[in-house]
Image (cartoon, rainbow, N blue to C red; front, side, top):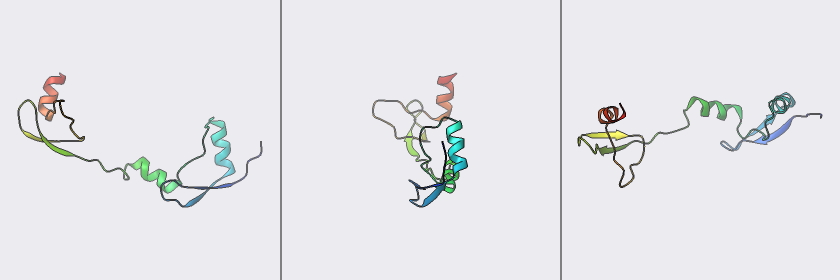
Length: 91
């Protein structure tokens, strides 16, 4: 099969980028089924983690009552523990 450079559109920044013949051969050798969705700059941003914003929620610990922050939104009916209470329960 002969490969030629193709122009694709990045799903993050919507800019066009070139999917080179060499990259296509690499994808074929690795048996990847899908074309890349992101350009190299957007892919490197994702891998560095700078694109994601972690939300934190302030809440009270269900065991000791101290105020703490957690990296998720607490759901009703499930206990939320501070770090020290979590460590004691986990051990």
